[in-house]
Image: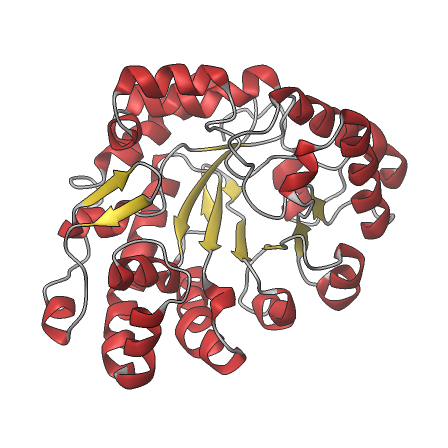
Length: 355
């Protein structure tokens, strides 16, 4: 077992006592940091940054140098799997990710196969290996993937969407096609995450960014069922430690109970769900992650601390069971100093709840 100087995050996910609430932030390595923007400019484009292991490692470590965070998350993108399938991922300024080749038919789906994780996606595994070496046991390293449904949304729409007309159209009109697409994506995500774990990822995040766009029955059939398959297929112990898994469906606060029944260790909450109510509903089964509104970081430092206090109080007393995070990713235009106040406030104010 490799030495880990701070295992607070892993312990909280596994329901073990901690001295204070651990904290990390979605997109903590990103555009709000001037040092990230400097590296990004040198790389030339986003995919070069992602696909160059030394650069991805450097960006992953940047927030750890500024903030007393309890975990790092590997710098990558949720769309690496579709890109490795040959869809031609590229980024359009002001519009975000786009695919040159979209999925619209059974014939398109039949061409897809599970990518070779140590060939097409080796750069992700190499980034994890380099980062584990450079992080030197300071904090755990999180690996991640997008959920099959979320990946399918991008692959069918060709990019981000407001109404999901094309992907939902396929789901309603040709459900067998949608299931065929989700099957190959679930197999790919299992292989991808297990390769990340083998490379050194010590915890896993499964991001279901667009699951909240579905109604209840369709969420369970087209999103949750495939995430449950992934959880069941993951390597859950490596390097002498349990590898915890956290599931986050944005907009999924009404489905917490079925999410908790998937076998995960943690369930992420967005800011629209009260964390105290969520604890009453599923806190005896899983650790809760979240869930401050990211826009609070646009307010004053004192207001940031006030909101941290509110979230901690809502969760309440208990020696474990909470990983502090935002309810979604940090915005690129926030003041980095407000992140300092966030992290320091979580650690300082949470001690009273862990006595």
